[in-house]
Length: 185
Image (tube, rainbow, N blue to C red):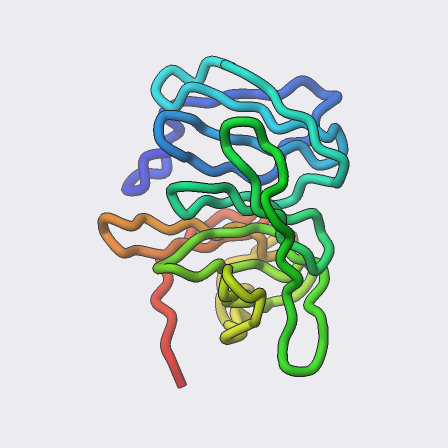
């Protein structure tokens, strides 16, 4: 998508039997999860041609990368650290605050050494230490939801452009993509 005009430059479609979820880019590969099909499809970043597939046993919700490994959510309080070469689990991170586990982790994005995770059906983004699983902060995105949801559904889109240090958020079927600056209290 052209960020200035909103025009779609290139589009890949899945057949009706697959419900596409999280996407991330690592090196020259684009990784796409499916929600219930237990399949991660890998495409060439430039041509968008399918190059391989991996299987997993959980649901597929969100995926991001730190540039070396993959982080995957399944709608629970767990984030699976996966090897991008074979998709095997390296370790599992339990996400928690000082008080409780944080379930319903959905969309993931790696931002300056931390994982931002949308908490499904809420207006909150958890900021997670990927080493410990500790929630470092909760971002209240209620104002964004009120301004941008329109006739759309839940907040669930997070993207970070490291070169420009810009953070973007949107939701399912929202008419608008927002460039966001997170303010600290």
